[in-house]
Length: 199
Image (cartoon, rainbow, N blue to C red):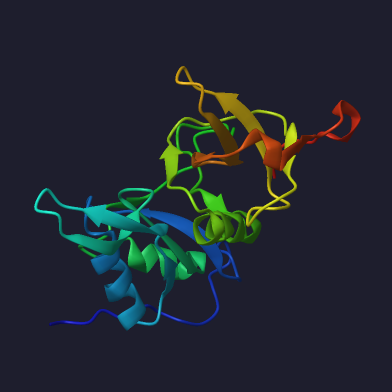
């Protein structure tokens, strides 16, 4: 197997001189294999996965790693390295920031803040319930804070579904929102004068 290498060193004048988290779009169900290939050539990456007990019709059960955000592999690299990585056959493209007003038809490449990656890792690592990801972009104010349980300290917005189940919506800018089933007794309201936009 031919192993591609990613250039290292100083970025060009218009590139970023430090590593950032970019969103690589890959073929569905290939997220883990792409992550392995990137790791093999020294590129830091992250696939949003969560442990799940899967049951088959024959009664067999096994814990699997479920990909929470299909077709997405987060890649931490410099802009100079990203320009090389995007040419790899297993990378379809990098997500652009559709919300940015660049003044032209060409939107800038989306960059995810370290805090957002850490928030996503925290949610997937601590939640006792399955986490789903909705692709819509949310611009909602924080209105609750989790005060009990493994997700204590997390802020978001409570929604109630038609089935009466309560869900905590946590915005992840540029990507959408993670939804988690939550007991309303585990959260407290945040006063209006203390609310802030999701970071």
